[in-house]
Every structure is written in structure tokens, then in C-alpha cells.
Length: 138
Image (cartoon, rainbow, N blue to C red):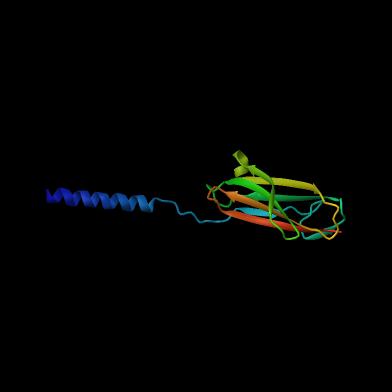
């Protein structure tokens, strides 16, 4: 009976060891996001005339094989005030690997107003990364 208990303890210890060593380590890397540049894209802080149209584009990609992209959000803050979500998208399929989006908006007719546009990407683990652009209205 004593040998059976010792054997059972040994088997359980081995199973525990095997289950712990077979787990993959999640590196916890943030998803990648960057602003599109060139052409008509606004990719740096700028000053633009009231009523003009701007386009801000992003490229995003997963940084770990299994941590696919899950959510994309665009938020806006006016004159440093509360951030308000202006666009949300759940990502699936091939969008989980790479995602690209162009946001076009017309600026208000309020000279001196400062709009900050914040682009956020979230992966399967809930890790987020952001890029932003500030536009001052002339």
C-alpha cells in the first residue's frame, strides 16, 4: 500500500511537471501600429484651414503568432477635453493578422481649435498600442 501511494505521488509530480513545461510562454508584446505617410496622409501634428478635409491612415499588425488583432478604435479630443470614440471596429479573419484603415474627416470652422485623433489597436490578450495626430484649425 505504501508503494502504491509513493507511485501515485511520483506520477502526479511528473504530470504536474510536464503540464508546466509544455505551456507556451506569452511574451506580452504590444500589437504594432503606425501612421501611413506620404501622399495626402496627415501623419504629423499640423495646422490646417477651417473646413478642410484631412485623411489619417494607419497600418497595424500582430506581433505574436497567436495574439491576433481584435479591436480598432478612433477617438477624438477637442482642446484637451474628454476623449470621445468616433469609430469602432471588431476585427476578424485576415484582419487579425494585419489591418489598414483610412480615416477622412472635415475640420470644424473654429479657428484655434485643437483636435487630437487617437488610433488604438487591441490584440487577443487585451494589450493595446496607440498612435495620435494633433490638428490645429487655422
